[in-house]
Length: 376
Ligand code: NAD
Image (tube, helix red, strand yellow):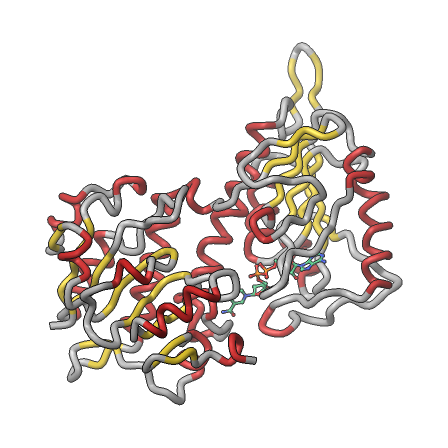
């Protein structure tokens, strides 16, 4: 019987867990056994008893790991913690392959097959397995909610007997998965919302959510979606035009949410100190890219930085602030992936070598690093 291990996350500040009672139940229905480390779900409001109730065994890490063929994680487990796993065991998690390059080598040396879920290709078939989408969506929501909490004013327009409160103006920079959810959330709270991106395909999406697109007009951005929906670094000419556009717009904004990322690179700098200085005191900026270097000058992970009277917020791990929902969706992403490749006869998932998904996510196999993006 294929044994699936679920470890308690070891990274500091990580509150999520890689399996939920729902997905444990489904794995067992497929014919696997599931072992969960004691306390693995507590920070996500899932008790050991909840896992036991659906048929998992709960125990110490060493017992959970022993002979496991698949180890599930939110973040990559410490290679040292894998002693005793089955030969060639799969490690299925968000492995931060560029940031934790040395750990990938250690996985290879340990003889395990590391599968990086954030490298899932952006193809229709893999949408339900995409941890970046499921987690970014919640992050976009949380950024707006926590900005609203830090803002000393209200979001919606209110007409009261004591007078009228004007609606907050929110500006969303970067309209991927997180940005779209940020637009929707800010609109629901009653803000007047505008948004920008480098990909022209987002213009229509912004309008369809009832927000105003703010785009560089005189220099071409990225036509359509961009490769796999991802942006690249922009030309100096574009960056200059974008900076001018932002300068003229941002001074009138109360809330700014930045979400811009470029895969495998530091986040692009979108807001300078001078632009912050042009904003009204009491305004709030939430930098969702702070852990990747930050879109905003001076932002610091997990700190509220006040500059020129403007609060700058950003978390090193935003989904960890919504542990229960983030875990539920993350767990489903992992289940959707493993069940799609489940081979009934083998009683376990099998990844065909010639599958696009295999090639994208497989980092190590047979003692070697095999992923093109890491070798290239
Ligand atoms: P992301 O997290 O990599 O980046 C966030 C946003 O920042 C992107 O929209 C990007 O264009 C933007 N950005 C980058 N540099 C910028 C700059 N200098 N200025 C302004 N904006 C900048 O992107 P994401 O949220 O992961 O997704 C991007 C796209 O991919 C979306 O259109 C999404 O719908 C698509 N997508 C498709 C699939 C699929 O088909 N399976 C899955 C996930 C996402």
